[in-house]
Image (cartoon, rainbow, N blue to C red; front, side):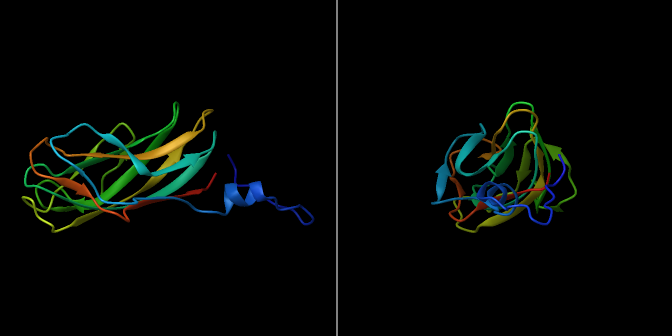
Length: 167
């Protein structure tokens, strides 16, 4: 879908402003901790609504900590017929800086945690594009421990996802 073009004399409506000019955001309202859970969960805060037949760019700032060996895995849930393409800048499971991947919404990406029960936070940055077909719905950030274990994995308050319609 092409970006909307306005002509001289067109009335700029609230709907136009909300669809094309207002950034979308989902901000983590409080720390959330999981233990012994390697199944991706839909985050209750980090999400935004996408209209049908549209293209959105998105950006995620993820601040987390986890026990040694549990680490973190992330992905995205999209509406039926939609997909997302994204990359992730983070330390991979070997502790090596990584950022050149290309994943889709069916993929999960891992990041190295900060250590056993540690309060030393790590961050990962995800950027990408999501595109819908005929069904509107939410782009939802998903996360879990990479390996289920007894140490806490925490996603910290103020982690966020932002989006902007581009087509």
